[in-house]
Image (cartoon, rainbow, N blue to C red; front, side, top):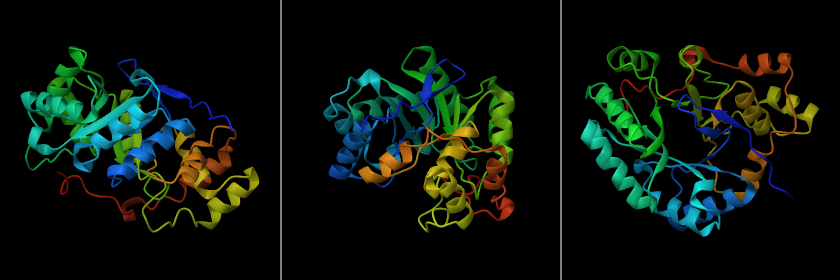
Length: 280
């Protein structure tokens, strides 16, 4: 079977980012190497990792062993709060490059704002410095709320290219999506099919919608992300599941179906990690 062609979204700084990628959180060692190779073989061209995942070396090895040139793969990685300063971000970038075995990272992200530390604005300034000298191709943040993003904008004039947040139909984060849309920033969804409890995969509405299109509930969810203009990075180490997740570009949800999926949102009751009180 021919790997599907994944469409792209264009970030503020001009980078064309695949509209769906592979998340690698908690996939370690040889399993991570195998997962990355399988994903690339299936057609993925966006691979997401992080310092905190402790798998950058394995992700880099998987990319090298895939047989594709480095420039055909977009790598996103993230740094921890210890590096929240202009010089610290450069040190974090250098360390991530060394672990990955690359000379640049496409999108580098501040993993959590950690507002109690009160240095995330300096971290974004550090990312801008890396962008300016070509060390990265786009500025990323992760788990930032609109209040964090507005402060960055007010104090620096910088709008990041990308905000990676926990987002699914149950937790559809309307406030964060609205801020991003207003400022031209792309929202990237981690845990896009929900948590490990599998509730979304078993949701009867999603199964019903999927049945109309010959697709699974998970594929309906990922198609919803795509039609919402979001970039989803479902995590998987299963080659069959990877292929299923990528097979969402040959059908379209109707406006009514999109509204039904969005209507699954639980609002303030959604289980979302609070980035004012969590982070590393």
